[in-house]
View 1 (cartoon, rainbow, N blue to C red):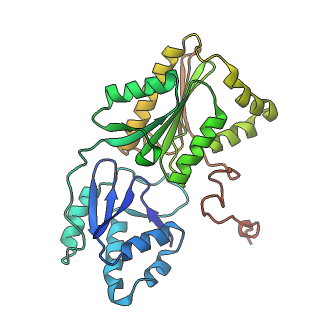
View 2 (view 1 turned 90 degrees about the horizontal axis):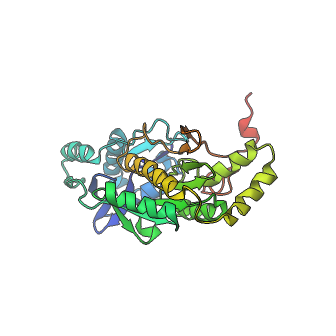
View 3 (view 1 turned 180 degrees about the vertical axis):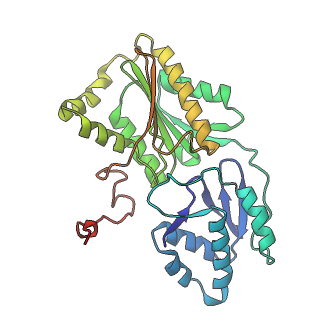
Length: 315
């Protein structure tokens, strides 16, 4: 069986063990010999849990196995089903810590820490009306939950903004976020509409390049659409109604960001895309599926096995 770390959580190495961090709370686990840390790395790379456990010295194996079972029972480690549709992003590490600490007399799990007092670090990339509006909206409406940072690698979430459909810039930012394993969303002003998303969880959801692939696949004239994604950057930066549209886009983006960092998957699922038609005053929302041939997150790009033709044959 393959398992993975819950996508809403992150693991950091500390002096005497590991630190599991979420958007709202966190816990520390003693791991003096580094056995659990190595096991988590192995299963993240796709090694079956049964094989990963066998790499642990026999005298310490039973203790780690008990800990892994408890991590699975509490939703910290989950079964890799190839998607996140059934994952409960509202898992509480504090609840896990209080229960598990009582279950292990040896004190392998440290005391649960209080909820994080520090806001979630968020990086905003882009210039123009949209980036400015998103920055202002986050500071005005979510200052107690977020902290704006100037470096992508210091962030727990990224917001990529543009005043036009800048596909090349979005694609480059998308690749950086996927490679750095940082969740992100995209905010753009189209002609007559605003779009927020996709909400990208690296290795677990579709990315921006998946969106481009699917738009081109569904287009009646894909080459013309591809060319327009480049030429649209020639439009003037200041367009009529641009500031109003930017504020609307920023408000929708803030809603999506807050839902995600508060771990409400039913309201902001992975791959979430929102669009508001400014002309027809029509709101729509959907979930983007991964593109099998995506050059950024498709099979083989992030350590995933490339499926063979024979594997798809049903006898």
